[in-house]
Image 1 (tube, helix red, strand yellow):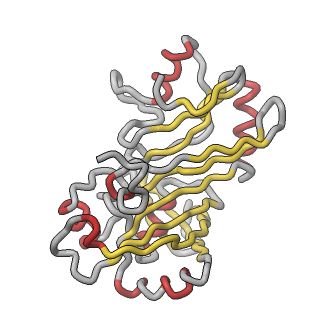
Image 2: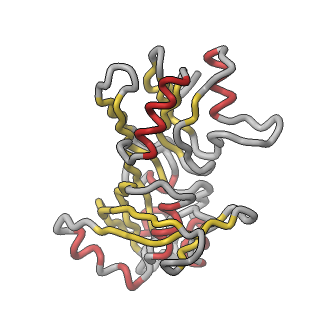
Length: 248
């Protein structure tokens, strides 16, 4: 099976491609869960965490129920470290963030998110809104590039930010919702992008959300050893930032 980063008797760590669901209820639609069951020739694969279908990145699965219980406890207790790369088209008001970023500044976002299950969307809500859940993340701006690097002749004064995002909580569509609300919509995000970011992504033929789960840390459920896995993104939006890794 392609995309396996590590495997032993207790866990299997994989790179999920963009556009491939972690788990689906649609009959006949392939997903990571069914692909791993076929690969392992086992009726059991423990799902510990998920990535949105249009997002690529690292996932760990358990091969035993005992391993799943320990990994789920780490995930629920925020002991599992999750870091992402994202490419945003900042709104004009957010361009000033680069001044602090150039000095190594870190930003923290804390919001309350309300999920709409019927539409499979989440939105920032006022604190105290019934069923809204606290969401927290931090991010750094690693690089800034002129948007013309994407080949859009109408880029004008647009800039692109490469962000490194660290999750503090795990909410539905959290990174996409919070960054968009903060004026940093991700390229390729048809649900939460701004009209400008959607138009720019369409012009540049960016089809997947510019978000990649690039680093995962956890304690091995049997040995207790700290496991760290990293990848670099392969999506079109990341190509100017990682030219040696992204395919033509």
